[in-house]
Amino acid sequence: MTEGKQLQHAQSSVLDVHTDPFSPREGRTLVWKNINMTLKGQKDEPDRKLLDDVWGEVPAKETTAIMGPSGAGKTSLLNILAGRNSSQGRLQISADVRLNNYTVDPTNINVRQLIAFVAQDDSLQVTSTPREAIYFSAKLRLPRTTTESQLQKLTEKMIEELGLTKCADTLVGGALIKGISGGERKRTSVGVELVTRPALVFLDEPTSGLDSFSAVQLCQVLKKVANAGSSVLFTIHQPSSEIFNSFDRLIFMNKGRVFYQGSVADVPAYFAERGRPSPPNFNPADWIMSVAQSVPVDQLDADGFFPKDEREIGEAFEAEDGKDVLGMTNTRRGIRTDDSRPDDRSPGIATQISMLFTRELVNIKRDVTPLIARFGLTIFLGILVGIIFLDVGQESRDNFGNVQSQFGAVIMILLMSMFGTAQPALLSFPEERPVFLREYSTNHYSVFSYFVSRLTMEAVVTGGQIMVNLLITYFLIGLQGNFGMYFVTVYALAMASTALAVALGCSVEDPKLAQEMLPILFVPQMLFAGFFVQTELIPEFLRWARYLCSLTYAIRILLINEFEDCANEQAANEDEPNYCRQALDNVDADADETWWNWLVLVALFVVFRVMALRVLQLKSTKFY
Ligand SMILES: Nc1ncnc2c1ncn2[C@@H]1O[C@H](COP(=O)(O)OP(=O)(O)OP(=O)(O)O)[C@@H](O)[C@H]1O
Image 1 (tube, rainbow, N blue to C red):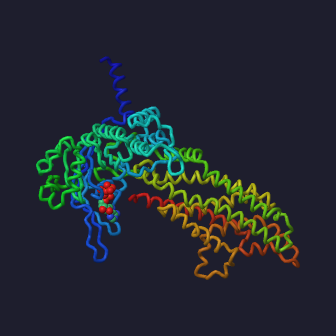
Image 2: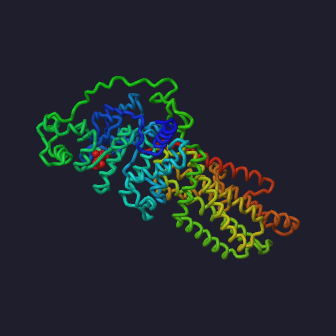
Image 3: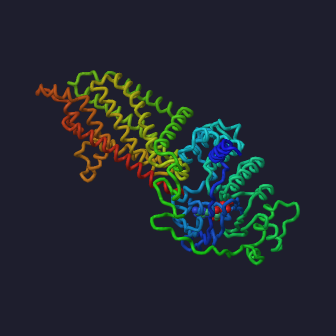
């Protein structure tokens, strides 16, 4: 070969490594023993052993299937190994799990991020297409040196291998948006994980919902991944004989115990030796399933099924000081091997934020109904309030009733903005939670990047919403305070309220529960703001709470903006009652302290945002 050709060859093989999802990789062997899972009985109930001394391994370069009757413990085992199940409540789990013979705690987020996990319920962004979902995963998880053209080629290859070409540009879809079929969604989830060339791949029932052709096609893809060096482990229900014979290894679970473990090729001999040979022309998978389900356990035990763990796996390696499992150094974004170079790092925070922000923009564009509803409602309520308080702001302020109506109009604008912006923020995270947790736990981006991209989007949408609200209400009502001051104050209140809403939203798992929490968000604000009940009438031990209510400060700033001039003018005429001053006094508004109100309003925004970020960080490491 000439020098030029050698160079060309070297360049093309470098390109292949980056564009081929099945390029060779260093494998990892996962070994486990003594996995027990017990459900503690209540009162006199006996304990229930759900997994009993389960042992096994997933060697590199092989596909291992977990099979067994319903309730045998397949999903429990897979979830324990993938760190998605741990002791809680009455459930007690103990396990000795080793990765390359280093003891690991699979629930540790750093270990979880080493495993590509495809869950049964695929949590994909509903407004993305399969092509976009796979590209998003590749872009954020592959080394930052991967070029755009390599990412595109890799994505296309993955789409082709998984038979997704026809639906590559159709939306994934969900409950309210029509999209690709369940099987296509499943294959997209698989593609999202495989595109990063992971060393460990776990899949929970990847073939369920697929037709037989697609199921075979998917198993071939998994086989290719294993051939490239990965360890592949998956649960499966009722495989056809073609699929069954395509696995390398089988772990057959029965009643929480290992019923068979070993090579698929050895299955017929194993059953024959124990007096249960598979009849000719019978799907071996169906046969072993029928033996496991129809023969009493005592009999199976006596026949020599349920093999004991006789492997000599020896002592686990000790992790070195300052290093985590596998002799790896723990870094901010997961575990990195010692020999990983700066170029191997996945993209930084700026790319993560820009990718997330762009996806959110596309999401809004494709699912525009919530945005239309949000702005539509703002316009409707703005017009309603504007008509009810039409020109009230222009009325003489020598009259108590007029000042009271003007006071009411300002409060209405603030309440409307607070409700209209905080409510969607409260509900949005619980809805996005499954996608966020999946992506975070598979190392797509940091919590901080997710948080900043969400905050930026919220800031833009909230700004627009407040502007629309004020353009209608301010002019219809005929308010006299400075318009710019109205905008910044209402905007600051909306951002502080959404900050609290986001903190609450991040702390609950269920969108319905988030809905139930709405009153907590608003009722205290209204109670402590001083316009329903005077502060002096609130029990002393509760008065401190008003300092936490952003509404209190926004009201003061806006009332000063609206009434301060008139309060000073009326003060010149000492014989007349000063209604503007009374309105300000009612809420303890003092023009000399405006800066203080601003300071607290901004501080509340910052404190609630940091609180939300912390809650999100804490919650994101738990994924069961
Ligand atoms: N958190 C839990 N609390 C109580 N029981 C549990 C829990 N998780 C699993 N189990 C019980 O453990 C047993 C094994 O459940 P698992 O979901 O692992 O079975 P499986 O083999 O995956 O079943 P299937 O094929 O039907 O999905 C079942 O009897 C189940 O009810």
